[in-house]
Structures are given as structure tokens and as C-alpha cells.
Image (cartoon, rainbow, N blue to C red):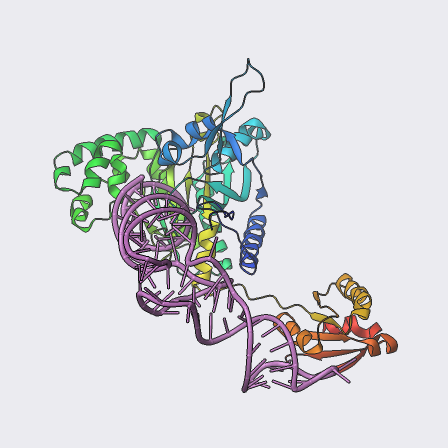
Length: 428
RNA sequence: GCGGCUAUAGUUCAGCGGCAGAACGCCUGACUGUGGCUCAGGAUGUCGUGGGUUCGAUCCCCACUAGCCGCCCCA
């Protein structure tokens, strides 16, 4: 059916009842964030392209291959067209807003969370979409606000463990590493290049390519034959300066005290250029190749990279689509909602009275489905049983007498209830 | 971006070079105001799109599109 319009590749419609699960996830996230004193930030869905080029990194796959970018037309002949991009992630936008509104001038630590769509033009797969939803948070501020403290790292990780637990996601793994400062990373890259030179010839094709373009990525290789070689490569921990080492040690100490279990992964390197020091990933089996539920880390130099003041920070982004998939795999499907009562008018003449009754009940806070007088009683019962705990029958008799007939589907008990008592009866 | 698998009813899926199928769901009746069980009947649809081979294609071939799996990357 080429004529009918369809959602474009990599995008999808979310429909009830699945949206109930999305709502639950978002409500839980908001509640947890509130307990940790985070406030919501909403940034635009598109930004100046250079924000991502400078923030995320020109050489990353995200920026070099996956962004939706276009030239916005100039308003006047004298004006240049502006290059705009649908946001591929939200951290850069948050930091841009932090700089633009001079939030650092408050002297306060900024704790901001966001929930919203992001866009990357990748090949779609389960758990990977071109429009996908992230729930993320950032802790950022001038150094004097404590933004650089390892306690912030530990607090964010502890909050994430709590959030996943409250969502009902069991069996997650937290993997942790420190990639050090920008200088540490540059030094490590050199060390790695030198160590790879004599052995790279024995490795897989991908690794041979990575050894040239991005040696850090060799550590991600999953080819079994390469593992013995990779295990003998120098680890980044040895290239860290003393300050970074102490910082990471302090994060681990705080996590231990907080009772958050983690697994150190010296080979965890993240794909965005802005990450420094602590990096982490929460993974879950059963997601297939896209096994990361969320990822994040520290970005002490990001603000300066995009022209702002020194503002160290740490943050994360959760793949909401992946949270949904994981919860569905754990069989926590959204149960079809049961309304409190189904109002069944008997005959089209009582339709108006049925609307009045439904209004009264709904205004009292009850969840009501309203049927239709053209339905035969049998059909009303069947429709009601699908969605409601009880049926309220409203025929001519009931309108005349003011006594309604209510049948409870779970007990099979049928009652006569005066209209004045109906609300309290249904609230039982 | 690369490689592989797949595409048939609202849903999950059979099927065959010659009238398009099942289950569930849906509609009608048995049953004028009492459902769930039962029985009888009914509608499901351009067989993803476009082209080719053929007397004839839903089936074979090609291309495209989309989904899934792996790679890549990442949330």
C-alpha cells in the first residue's frame, strides 16, 4: 500500500495500553528525581548544528553520520542560512541553556532532569529507533558548588540504582570506569597505539581499522580470538594522573558505603567526546545487541568546549524505549485499565439521562465508561465486562424510580441503589 | 553504511503456479431488561509496493519499501 501514509522508518506510534507503561515509567522517574531535588528542564528539540559539533565531538559517529541536519532558510538576502540539527542527545542542550541563562552565576549546583525525544539516523533495530526517548539528568555548577566532588558521582549512581529498583527492573548490571582527563586520554591513546603496533596484524579487520582511527574502540572488540591480545594491552587506569585516580577511588568508596553494587570495567569507553573521569553504563540481558539501559559520565570540560565558564558536571541518559522493552520482557505489561463502572443506557431515549449520570459520577472522581442506548442489553454486558468492574443499568424504570441497577462482575451480585447513594456505593 | 531472515484478515500465524485459510477477536440470531458457557450464521483481505516469467503469480525471479537478527554505533 504505497499510497497510504505510514510512520517513517525508525519512528513509531505508541498506543494504549502500552502508553500506560510509558506513563508509569515517567511518573516514577519524576517522583525519584523530586526526592533528590532535581528540577525539570525542557530544551528545544532542534539547536544550532555547531552546538553538537563542538559539544558531542566532530569525529563521533553521532555527529559525523547520524544527525538530522538542514539549512534553515535565510530571512533576508544579506543573511546566511543557519544550519540546524534535531538533537541527537540532550546534554549539550542542557549545558547550552546553563551557559545562556548564566545559571553558574547563582553559585548553586544545578540539578536538572529532562524527558523527551532524541533523533539519530541509524539503522533501526529492536531497541534502536530514529526517534527515541531519553530520560536523563545533569548535575552541573561552578567548582565552588561542589560539582566536581566524587560524592556527586556516587549520588547520581545511587539514584539510578534506586530508580531502576522502583521501576521493577531486576537483574541490571552497573559497569564503571574512569577515562581520566582529556590529557590522560590523549596520553593513553599514544600508549595504546604503541602497544598495538606489534600485535595488530594478528587481529580482526575491524581492529586493524580501529587501531588507526580510534584505538580506544579496540577495547570494545567482541571477537573471541582477539581477547587474549586485548587482555595484555595497557589499561587506562595506569595512564591516569594522580588527581583522577584519587577521584575515582573516592567514587568507589562512597558507592561501597551506599551499598550500590557495581562491576569495574577497565575497557568501558564511551562514544561521546565530552566524557571525562567517571563513565558508566547500566546494562540488562534480554535487550539483545542493544543491551545498554542507560549510559553516562562526567563531562568536566564540556561547558568550556562550547564557550562557557568552567562548569564540571555529571549526567546520564536512559533509553526509555529500552526500559519499556525490559519491563515487557519481565512481564510487567500494563494491565488493561478497569474502569469503576460502565453506564449502560437502555434505549436511545435514555441517552441524555445517561450522559447526565456519567457526568455526575465522573465529577465525583470515578472512572466511567459510557455505553449507548442503541445497544441491546446483552451487548452492553459484553462491552462492560471487557473494561469495567461493574455495570450500572439505566433504563426507563430506573429513570422513573431513581433506583439504579448495579451488577458487580467479580461477585455476580446485583443491587438496587438509590441515585443519591450511587457515588459512595461505587467508591467501595 | 554492510551481511542475513521475514512481509497473507483487527491480532497471532498456516498455505498453495489454478475460487484466499485457521484460531482468537468482531457482527447477527437462538435470547423484547441480564453478559461470561453453548449453538447457528456472517464479514474479514488490492496476500507490503512496483515490475518480470507464465495461458494464469499470493506462490517463481528482480527491484524497492518496511520490520527483525548480526556487524557498526549507542540509549
